[in-house]
Structures are given as C-alpha cells and as structure tokens.
Length: 304
Image 1: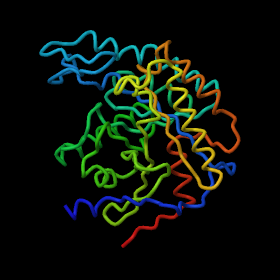
Image 2: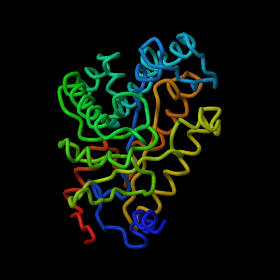
Image 3: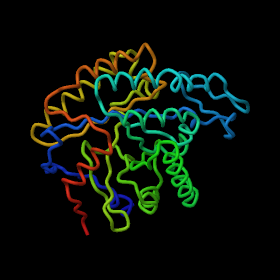
C-alpha cells in the first residue's frame, strides 16, 4: 500500500504554481476539445464481440447488430460535426479534435476538413475503449496503428494522446517509446499542465476535465437543457478567469458531436462561445499550442 500511495502526487503545484503567462499576457488558456468517436464505438457489425450500450438510452442489444445505437452515433458525423465546428470557426476559436483513429477511418472527410481549417487532431486511441489492463504488446501496436492512421488521413502525425477512461500503467512509457508525442491528457487532477518523469525523461501532461464536458448530458444526466451546460461552463470560466489574475490557469471544454451537436443543446455551446470570445485575459488555443507554450516557458524540473 505504501508503494502505491507514494507513486501518486497529491500536492501538485500547491500554492506555488509557475508564474508563466499565456500569449498576449493572458492568465487563462481555454481549450475546446471535440471528441470524434463515431465509427469507433463497440459494434457487432464492425466485428466487435458486443455492442455499445450507452447513447441517448442505456440499453445493450446482445448477439446481433444494434441498428438503433449505430444510427444514434451516426448523427454525430452526419450532422453534429458540422453544427459544432462551423460555430467555432465563425467565432475564430481554435479547436482540437480528440479523434479515435478507427472513427477517422470511417469518416476520412473529417480529417480532411480538420486539415483545411487548421484543427489539431489529438489521438483518442484506435477505438473508443479504455487501455487499462491491455497487454503491453497489444497497446504498443494500437498506439503505432493509430498514429500511422492519423498521419495518413490528416497529413501529419498526432502530437497529443488521450485514452478513453483510464490509460494503462504502461501508456506513457509506450508513448515516449513511440516518439513524436509532446503530451497526453490522461489526467484530471489539475488546472495547469505539468511534467512527469517517464524513464527518467520529462513528459508533459495537459489535464482534461469531466465536469466541464457535455458528457454530463449522458453519464449523470446533470445537464438536460442547453442552458444547464452553458451555466456550468460559464461559472467555471469566471472562477478561473478571476483566479488567473494572480496565477495562470487552463480550462478544458469537452464536446461530442452526437451530444452537444443536437439542436436542443447547441444553444448552450452558442452561449459559451459568445461569453468567452474576445474576453480580455483569455487565450483560446489548441492543446498542442498550450503544450508548446508550456514547454517553451516552463522548464521541466523533476525530483530525483
């Protein structure tokens, strides 16, 4: 038990975070992340051994293709993607696509559209699945396969990684071994990037967030109307913006094409965009831009 506890960092920056400022002397960096998962969900029709059980309803169809579930996911790529991205483009807000490689294989035009509009593509794994418990060789192959797929479809290798749910205890070491990854977002424990030691080398973590995320329409039903989403996001934004006057802060806003892309919810995103855009002291950026700025301005200092 002592070894398990000692491997975790419960302190973080404590009351002494770095004094770095974001570009334009901003105190708060805001990262909009659109998850691209449609086509990477569990589906018997795609050769998986079972179907995804959660979408607008919680129900698992056993043994045969679930045409209802599949069509619900398809809404995200057919309609939601366009509805969301065009609002962000019109507002001039940079965007990171958190994309499963298998989803891009099913919707290669999303990769082309991302390249056209300068979106970052962060790798969300090969398929929409946790890596916890994966055999090391299997995970190594999935990381390589995913990176190769994105490079072929997008024209550039991903520099970020984010596992659905939990990464494995090997994930960061395998990302470092593969090379080319600047950061991962497999953590939910801070409002700022930070470094961890991986095989004696500094590796950057750009934390993500479950609370400022439209997944709460599904996972906990905490959000029902678009205003529920907007109100929570705006409250978090205002808190971080106030704190960022003294210390730097970062905020992640998680979106899903099949969730916030619905007409009854999109007004929540519109309210958030209108509230955030052009605010003083705020830098909207891709996660790659955040990672590169941090690496250039906050030298890695690892204990030991």
